[in-house]
Image: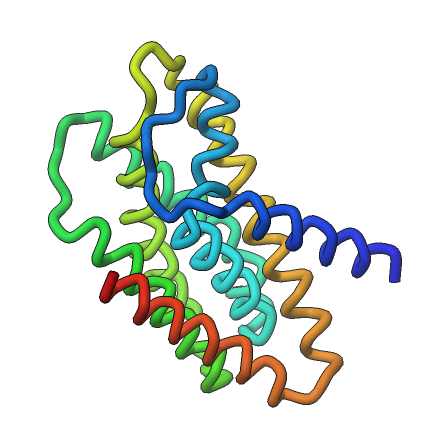
Length: 191
């Protein structure tokens, strides 16, 4: 029960910190900037938490591999940005990830690991590209990467913890969470 209280507290703090959807340049040092970036964009925060939440109902392989898919996609996306490559539709991909993750949760969808892993990796590719493209000038790449990797894993694991908690409740609650996330994703896409 103590873990549940900690997860709920962490989720509340992460949500409270997400007052801005925009991703303005963060002026803190590389590590701090990387750590804050996923938490200060509502779209990033919702997508990562939703993926963690959704992963709980997947096969053990998918559930256990989700953090690797999340971080792998993030790092690949950031690497593309740092390499000067372009990725069309980044913001659309980010908001679409919130919408689709909400739908997956609302429908209690179970996907094969190859499909689910590819989807998660693709979603995180867009998020990682945005993080990489918005690295502050003068920030140390390794510190920034470490910061956003830690924050991303923390948000995903908080989502997983909340998903585990919701599995003990009626599935209507999980469906409701998914519906709210899908509506939030649609709103972010339209905004």
